[in-house]
Image 1 (spheres, rainbow, N blue to C red):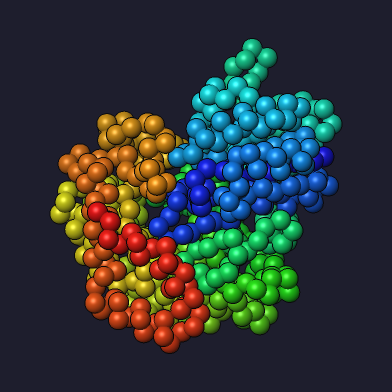
Image 2: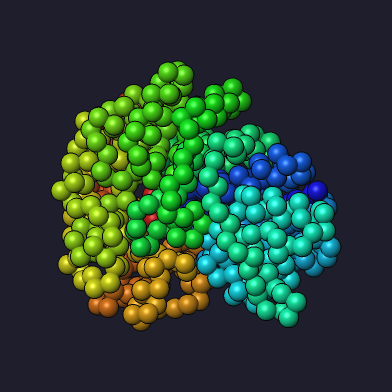
Length: 481
């Protein structure tokens, strides 16, 4: 069975797989992580897989279609996202036109949230794969090869005999993550690490996950509410370490890892066991992970010894009412303590700050900037809250009349960067974007920060490479309005 997995062309360096898909100011480009996981499972089941990551390779529509056609697939699986959905469905129609005998499927957070809308808008699309899709895509391929009834494959939305959209029932989340093949082995066969960049990791880097799902209830967080679910599922420390050994053997050029778990630090016993296993195995690859600002000092110290060089933390807001609205369940006192502990440990902190929550005033926005300046993370990002179909935040803004448009293309501006499609009730989207631009300048152009970054670049060669690569694309945005 021949299967083509396609991260379709859109804007140059459009990072579709990240939680807020966009063209980023830092030049970040995510691995197509979930397509790659599905591809690894397809190959394990005996399928012949081609992987086309058009944004990473700079392919346009014609070149992508030519490469897909050359593989002569029976099944094409097309990744989607909210801001690019019109483009993605149009591309799916082009695949059908070019390959009339190919079964065309769409995956991703957006079509998971709105499968009927996607199928209605794109008659050429055969099926939407809903939710976590590794096993669903594998079973879909097997059913197509056998000519079996697709209604027996859970996790699908498709047209019934009367033309109306029906679903085949939910698929249970994958319980045994250790049973999945290593995604890094799929990367080795199909992708080029130098194509991908995350300024929070040393370059070149690989992206892995040690868990799926997140039990925390942050109302805007995309993956737990659409594809991965709220239940935490974890890989064993032994399984993760075996993949790290594989990476050491087969990726000599890789200098960093990014653990892209929704929250890597969930479960102190689990993280402790994983770090100890990394130390016992003598693995010395520096890594970055997503974390909450509630990690104990002892665990931070262990993480540092096991190779953690940076954590990415959603501090979100300096306004208590906003933290309550998103159900963050952390206060600024705990945030300050966390950053102090991380700094003493030698772990860098990348801070994420969001404005635009319901009811926020200009005073609340300024409180968020002051929090960022007081915390003094190594790097910071400021952006208006991005709400996506399938999240409770999206439904709240929509029901309260705070969603300024439902044209998904407007989730991005004309350059492909994050736009703002919401208001707080007193601050509109244009004002929120202007505030974020101003906050970014204020944070990064502080004399103390500039001196700190200059010293870091001069004294740490690894950080120097990262800093120069990020600066090359980022600096021009500091002076924009």
